[in-house]
Length: 133
Ligand code: AMP
Image (tube, rainbow, N blue to C red):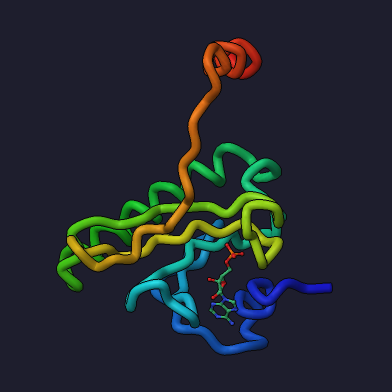
């Protein structure tokens, strides 16, 4: 079944399009975290960050940076959250790779409330060993 983003890319459902090229399309998120919240969507449907070819991902990051620049220039954004929800466990709702670019302002109170934890004694070095690349 086609994802909502495939339907948007194919023009089957409406969107507010900011940019497009051969490998991605940029639209406004219909339920923005902040007004101007944009989505850089791969034209081809790769379900996740893990599946996309590096060349496409790196191009999408370049486009995300163009969006960040525009949000700063035009909306006066003082910062942005640039994020990818990667697989359903992380909160990804649409299984079609997209990068969120959310304009942010000092004191806007929108910082995602990820509860932070602590390591037990000696545990951080175990995780360090496990995750060394
Ligand atoms: P994620 O949870 O990372 O998969 O994000 C999916 C995003 O797509 C959400 O922020 C939705 O608000 C957004 N979204 C879903 N349907 C549409 C649509 N028709 N037009 C624009 N944005 C959409």
